Image (cartoon, rainbow, N blue to C red; front, side):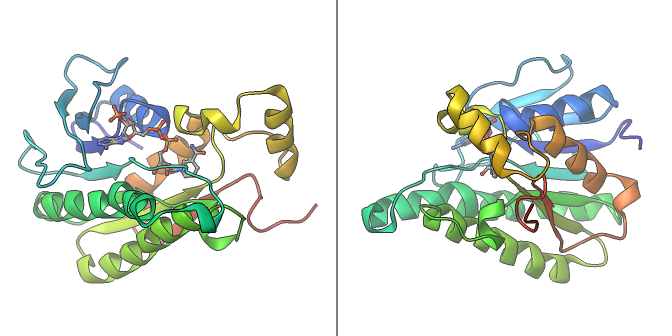
Amino acid sequence: MSFQGKNFAIVGASSGIGAEIARLLDEQGARLFTYSRRPPTQLSAAAHWERVDVTEENFQLEGLPEVLHGLIYCPGSINLKPFSRISAADFRKELEINVVGAFRVLQQVFPYLKAAGPGSSALLFSTVAVQTGMPFHSGIAAAKGAIEGLVRALAAEWAPTVRINAIAPTLTETPLAAALLNSDEKRQSAAQRHPLRRIATPADIAQTARFLLSEAAQFITGQVWSVDGGFGRLKT
Ligand SMILES: NC(=O)c1ccc[n+]([C@@H]2O[C@H](COP(=O)([O-])OP(=O)(O)OC[C@H]3O[C@@H](n4cnc5c(N)ncnc54)[C@H](OP(=O)(O)O)[C@@H]3O)[C@@H](O)[C@H]2O)c1
């Protein structure tokens, strides 16, 4: 799988899963155009960064190259609350960062992905909590459910030129999930809930991302890939 000389835009390469995807692509010679509120660290000097807050009105991804072979959109949230305690403002915030931000990014980058021709692709993030109902997840499940619908509709609209897929991770060891994994008890309980008996790492998710963005996945579009240690489908 070579990404040598290929152009990838990553929204959210400064932390967690996006940082690991950026590291893998950078290592394999991709040219990176990254966007987030803080700059990414540990990328080669050639990686481009622009400050962007996807919750701001009319943000623009500046400095994109003429063609893009891939786009990865990572901003997301984990705000777990009983349904009765979620305000409409909280609910809108979930939609803003997870869905409206992705919508704006996809509208901006589509011409660049199309210009790269067949094989170019976009990758979004859902969550295991869309296909598996869990208490206190109504806000994020609704927002990521919209992402899954968006992926399928756009995959149909953009075929045969541009592919689009999503990954639905389970709880993954990143700064976003820190509050859910900040004690030995929470960590053990999280590991035990998963048939594969451990907590997902950013590398687990990034390896699947690398595959979906690569030439090896050229016949895959409109799919939501679970990377969840068996959590969503298995009883053990
Ligand atoms: N971690 C999990 O347990 C888990 C589980 C299921 C699904 N997911 C999904 O996986 C994706 C990646 O999650 P993660 O855990 O890697 O999150 P993370 O560690 O918080 O990283 C998120 C990235 O997005 C950027 N970002 C966040 N808000 C932004 C904004 N308003 N404008 C621009 N950039 C923004 C962050 O950069 P700055 O802060 O520098 O802006 C960071 O680079 C998310 O969509 C999340 O919902 C994660």
